Image (cartoon, rainbow, N blue to C red):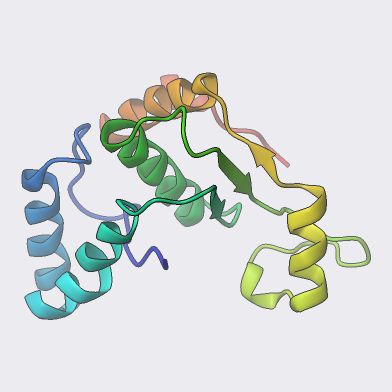
Length: 156
């Protein structure tokens, strides 16, 4: 699935799995970006339904910029609130660089061989601790608690 949300902008709530959260997001996106409700349903909500399927594993590919990281926190909290985290295993692939390329900020810049390399070498299985930390960071982010959020920021 493709994650087509902009959680780095607009209203947020700790309970990302609730209908009220998605209703508020749809209204915000509709107003801010002139996005028809049907398009939001198709691009975001219908995509979320894909996560309810049965999989042998889930791989989260997110970029290392602020937009990608906020969306990653959102997805991790969505999964934590909506799924049994014991199955299937959930992996993260979040490249910051690639051999021979100093600053790979967008995975869209990578070719097939590079994507295969990243999958094979930097993919890391997420643990319950990772999801707990993501929940703490998400809570700090939605409260605009810069002091608490700073502890989760890694300067490259």
